[in-house]
Image (cartoon, rainbow, N blue to C red; front, side, top):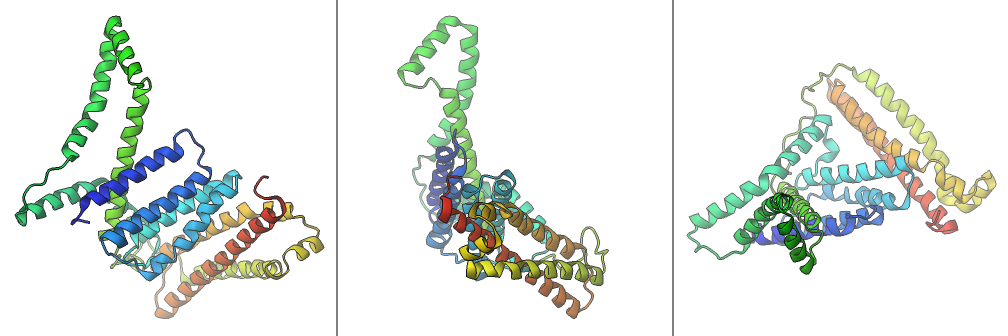
Length: 353
């Protein structure tokens, strides 16, 4: 992106404006999913199209649950389900960013996620500034002639607007004649809501700045070459392998029993629901939010036990990983079941109820 940094800023500002357009005085609804897709498209354009940086294959698998949970945000209005769907969408987007080049999110432990998100947050604040400085430095080292740019003018106007607005408000309060003249001037320009416009412009630019940091982090800081998983935990690995294996194994057995019950609906669908005495509405409404919650708490369970469990041999490490992967696979089947519930409900009623 250093060869053409303007594209980074144009995409970031466009996404900042899209955020304002979709969410200012609008309920999130389907707009949240639309914005998630726009961010993914914009990011992939910069990383693949401009930077020619290909994502790790394993990182691409994250796009499936990201799009699934983004869809859930507007097809389910139940508060717990909506909250978890929004949270998991944003969390998985973050994981996609911090593992874009490395793709080793499957092997992450709790502290890998913590440090990864902390680094992402830091780069969102710092990376755009250092990136601009690096671009100018490399241009000077190559002896490139200085290019005329409108950015200094834009930055000057951006800084001047809120300062002028504050002084104008103070002067208007001090003199009624000046206040009337300023009001007439703004009315002539159709700028009666100037403070609101300035506020919106400010958060659009702040959002664009942070998004630029996200894209730069994915392009340069997401190789995850060294993982903390397997090293000494910050909390200390105080739990034995046997205890953790019993807990994870018990959860896996419970999940297997649930999944076995679900398979009759995968193959029987409508007929089985009527045989069991359930309507479409009861089947779809009952348990959808709970299944999303199960996915959320399963993630916390695996990360938590991964951080505090002692694995002293290769066999123990492989067994723990197998149990964790098994639980994740079963959770994915449950999410398919949740999606199936939505399909059945939509077939009967649409998304009107």
